[in-house]
Amino acid sequence: MAVIRHHVGNRLSEISIHNGTVYLAGQIATDTKQAIAGQTREVLESIDRLLAEVNSDKSHLLSVQIYLSDIAHFAGMNGVWDEWVAQGATPPRATVEAKLADPECLVEIVVVAAQRS
Image (cartoon, rainbow, N blue to C red; front, side, top):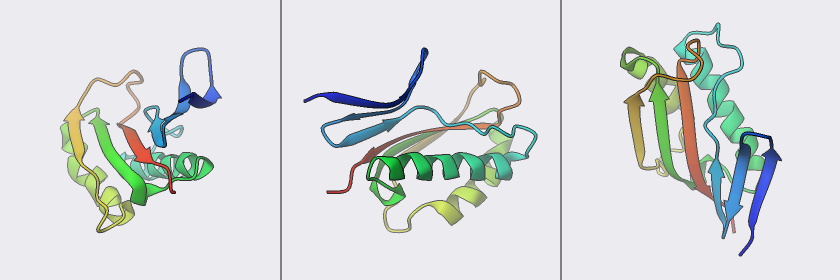
């Protein structure tokens, strides 16, 4: 089976698909002046948009990895996450504190999802 890539750049592709499984690159906010809630909301909107492009959505998430620049942002990120995530289809998830590439980024989220049949 072929690997299909979308939004291919010199360093990374935003999306790779193999055998009906969708892999997104880590998503970060473009407006890094926002607090954790705003950055998380922007990242989740980006995930929604990218998944829609490839016939998937948040109810098809298989796993999620969340990276926070400071674990003190955990509650603020979770407040937005809890409003967004598809209840009854919550994916396995890990959340860790990590030094992110851009010090103004407060959150980065990586998802793996299934395409809709």
